Image (cartoon, rainbow, N blue to C red; front, side, top):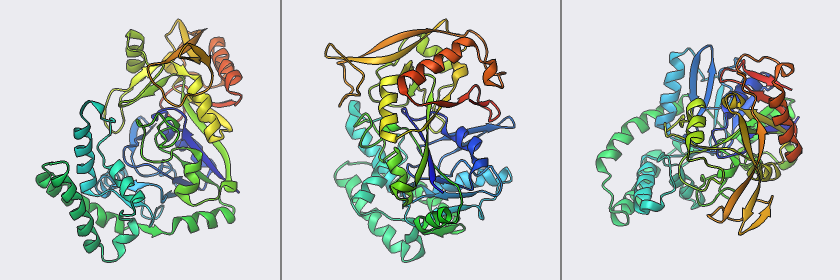
Length: 422
């Protein structure tokens, strides 16, 4: 058996949660391998919308094992809120959700450092969700982080030592007023620590490899998107972890030769939340129409998403980096009412045409479009590929011809039932 990987190919928010939920009947184990609670995976079924921030998207399927891997950073207070809301819906995850001892903790002071850092940047701020993810990963790389396994021994001593370092920074470097906010955060945070203690804390790399060796099927669920990868995204406007396929190896402890299928998810258009370059962004009525029809607001922050046409230069680059074997196109129904649909197939960089993704997306990068006819028909009731409008089939074929990877699934609505396999 291999570990299959499912990840976003754009700037996040592609609809990964829904796809994992649709695919989980085929898998025994669902894992999260990186990111923190800045990720919001939205699943909608039985007319109820569920947003998951830390927990893998397979928890709504009975008899599945869900594992939070070592590459994830966990905020105990957010984790507790998530667990409590799921309990109210009748989902008790204590037997089915396992947590890596090597996953790092987001401390209350990480959130304060996040806010202080963004405030200090002023107009040059990154657009952080202010959840403390960046500072938590910074401590991890600096070898100062606290991990889930630390909860089990001398935790209070370790916690106080780390918080002292953080508050010294907040006072002496950022000159940031933190006392009241820290008291508020700590109350719910330590309640979250007690919640975490109720779960199975495991050596996840050993458990996952043994599951694979025993013949169990495993899918690894990524957060954010490839264009937010710390190494290969639109730096510095990126997240703090490796969102690409290679991140599944380091975020779960599986070898590269254990990776099987790589499902790459993209929207039929493009969106981005927060600051940073976005070549195909539409700052006009068309962009607003995409936002309104697609309900493009962040599932974690509620921030309006920036919207634009599909960017095949960036998508082709993401497919190369990730080794994508199958594509999944989301939100095709958002394009139902457009007379024509533009697709970026090249960039013009300093006057030269290129299909290669550049070192930096700056003001010298200009998208070059090809126009395709819209289908002008509602897709939400379509249940089979044979009922696709001709123009939708042509849109998909055009994308496949440019990317040389098949589009296997097309989503035509938010519900898990509105997912069509080709």
